[in-house]
Length: 462
Image 1: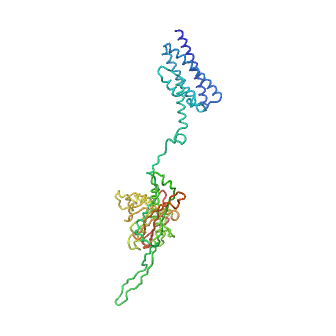
Image 2 (image 1 turned 90 degrees about the vertical axis):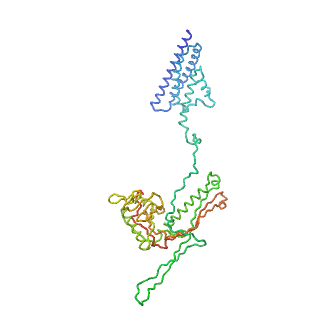
């Protein structure tokens, strides 16, 4: 019995000694934290290591004493006290790892003196209380948290290779392009083969008929003729790329290329019909035809009423000179939606949605579109075409009012080619699309009116 009491007294002394060391370690860490230092200085590091060694020795002796007390089968109360004290040491060691792990070797490392799996077994085996094993496991857990927080993530080289990107190739995003709204409003004809121009004979001066008295000669005026010529032009595009890209891509990459080329072809024809320069190889567009009716609206501060008046004048010009009405109005999307924001003197919108049962409206909004049919104005359908620019005369757009059936667009089929031999030495593939077409707005230039002027300056925000 005296031996057990002696052991208990010795255990209490060693626990008290270790607790004192723990307090000293906490004081060192507190000073570093108060001075906002992430590392200990040289003296503190030396003292910290000494205390740590002393605690390790104390833990070893405490374990030995516990084992001897266990042999005497009187361990219940004393071992509880030892476990609580050991838990306190675990907290200190974990705190130590938070500050010092950056400059110290990992607890469990290749070639190290401790085994993670052995310590795990010793800390969980029934009837065995290995305080040092638990301390090392706690320190390792803290080291792992720090290492994960500092280095591991989705960055390549720090674990990112294990989170690969997902490429949704079948849902690729095509390039947004304008269509050919205005071109499709024109009368379309099949382009005849074997020619480089379309020539249309035109009666430019006609007969006259006047009132005639009895036995007088009838009016006799010789007709005059001219020719409207539409050159046949080639519109073509191509893509050149590696044969490996074609063969190794998991999707049919040639289809991706051809779809974009065909969309580009449509946009090119659509733009040429509106504003083609008429030079060699390029159609003469509507805006380039100087013989069309011109309506100018001049205003420092454009208004919806002013633009509406100009469009009404354009309708009148076609009706007066073509002797047939126009059949459509075409404008850039910004002009139409700017129109939709305009109000009259009483704050009522000039363009009213069709669902609202419009009454006495300047325009009717039937559908919200980026291109194509959107509503009516002056009894005519309104079409939006982004191919009508916004930088004419530096900062203006245009509104076209026309009898589009008087415009003529002759088109051949769109053809495609895949050429391997041309660039075979470089293992490249050349994909091409092309077509032949001719266009003219000069059959009846008076069937077209173009609205322009400072009143059509591009509205801010639209």
